Length: 528
Ligand code: HEM
Ligand SMILES: *[C@@H]1O[C@H](CO)[C@@H](O)[C@H](O)[C@H]1NC(C)=O
Image (cartoon, rainbow, N blue to C red; front, side, top):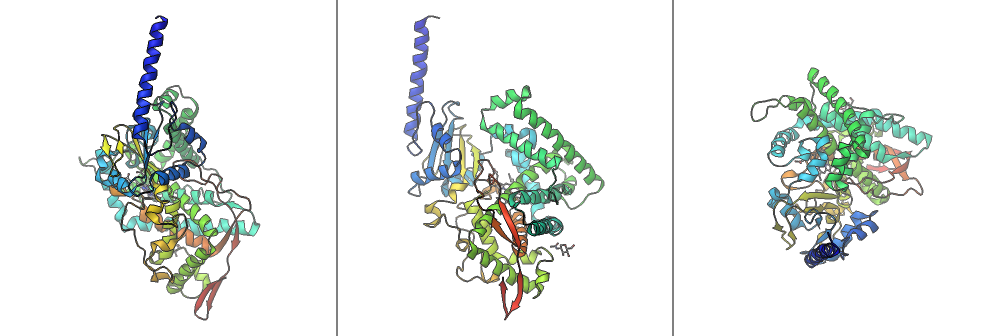
């Protein structure tokens, strides 16, 4: 090959790149400035510690009007289609993606490939018929009272026998605890109990290491790593068992063994858990689920139901610590309800966690939890794959094969959606009688537009565990607030972790102090 040929080849490459780039830039009038060759990468890199706020900022800028809140990021080193990211938080677009054109926006092949080793074809990781079948079966289970009762039994047990004791000891010893870690352990134990009837007891005095929990964490982490790089990279690493891929392999073995023994135990001794109930089901051909499918289903539920609730509770406690006036309103409501159901003696209020009917009456608490999820949604960005070229309701074009992200985090922080005080923590925005706060006087109001608040997703793929999650969060929130006052350890930095779940990067370190509950004083319940 002579020099001229090389030169012509390079010129052709450069000019086709320039053409592609100017084509992109013209389409992308709404995003951050694009740099030649590296697209939005410099901005992504500069903002890597605050990705969600950076995205929200971009969407706010491009979406001053309510019809244009979409910005597009491009990563030119990837193939044209894969490098195309559209991010939106416009409720009309979100409805279009999650409901109207649901079939055009599945999880997609890259996502499924990355999660396949951990989740198989489970509900969380499948599309089309495979997903629909599981969705139908599982949705039936989730409407039963049995599952709700089972959840309450597990929550009841973990709070009474472990959470309260651990916090009491921490209070006596005046040692700080990482509340996020305690909550992660608690929800992990509960979801395992609910799903396959075995409580791994990761929440226990001394906070022991648990091989199953660690392996599950590590498998999730390594799986997420796969999504950060082009697919062929992790494929190569997997073949040669390098780095995170070797680690993933080891973790998967531990998880696999644990699930097998849990499944064997349930076969001998079925109970109220999800696996026992699914073991009796038949698919459309009259066949029972195979062991492997049952194990995958179990793991999908553990993944879906675990971190989400504990992360939400961590942000809830942090917000409440910073808003004493809201803490007082929550306490007023909880105490009013408990007095109605259990009488005037404070001992009875902290003897057992909430019963169903009590949880149902805690409307202000529900509003405070929902308000937490608006500002700190456990799943901050939700990715979808685009099957066919499409135009979103606000006019944005999305090319086939690209990725579209519903920025749930940004949707909670738009003035155009929530008003001038969109960044304030104000549970009253969910209640129809702001001002009055005496327990059952409130009524909780869902927003008229169901696609404004999408922390639990919406449309056909809406979170199945929403009611169970509220039940668990209410029980834990009231159990802790009734017994303890929490104080942030001075100097502790609460920061977001850049991950698919909105963890606190350094946990939530708090001091615990027992709370004195006073009985009835002149007909009014006060909390000291
Ligand atoms: C505060 C707590 C929770 C939040 C914020 C939450 C949020 C979500 C979100 C955003 C999705 C959609 C994910 C996606 O498709 O990419 C989802 C799906 C799902 N969630 Fe939850 N979730 C919570 C608790 C739970 C619990 C406790 C369970 C189980 C007991 C659960 C079970 C599921 C299942 C099975 C799906 C998959 C539904 C499907 O793909 O058809 N979730 N959740
Ligand atoms: C919690 O457990 C205690 C002791 O077993 C029981 O008395 C109480 O009724 C339970 N509460 C719920 C909601 O299951």
